[in-house]
Structures are given as structure tokens and as C-alpha cells.
Length: 98
Image 1 (cartoon, one colour):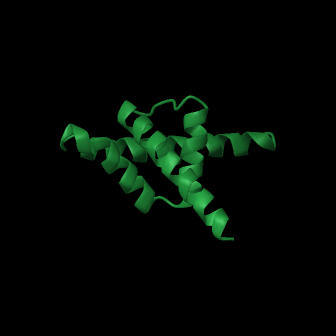
Image 2: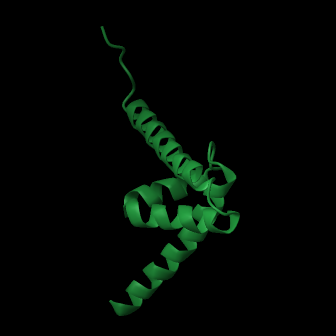
């Protein structure tokens, strides 16, 4: 027998699971870069996320960051801040072309 949930509870559960998955993925990327030189860690994490995560994934992790970024390691926080700034510049340049 399954439990009955309210209509909004599954959505909140999905959002939490989705954010937790993105946090885990981002922290795994940071773990890889821990063996790199300190000056390449944050740019490397940002570049990897920028290249391999689609726009929705980035938007969702930015929203998680805006809610406090629970679970994100400091290098990921810094990389996401750097990447978000670059995304904003890119989006602004695209809107000038349209």
C-alpha cells in the first residue's frame, strides 16, 4: 500500500531530490579538481559545469545557491558565482543581437 501525499508534496520532494543530485554532482566535480593546482580549481569546476550542464541544470543549481547553497563545498560556491557572472554576460550579449 502506498501513502497518499498532497498535490504539492511530490513537487517539493522532486525539487529537493533534484537539488541534492545537482549538489552531489557538483561536489564530485570539485573532488576531481582537488588534485589540481589551487589556481586552476575554481576555473576548472566552472568550465566543466558550463560545458557539460545544460541551461536548466545551471539555473536550478543557481537557485539552490540563492537559497543558501546547502551542501555545496566552498570551491563549488565560488565556481558557480564565477560561472553565473559569465552566463549573465553571455545572455546580455545575446539579447543585444536579437
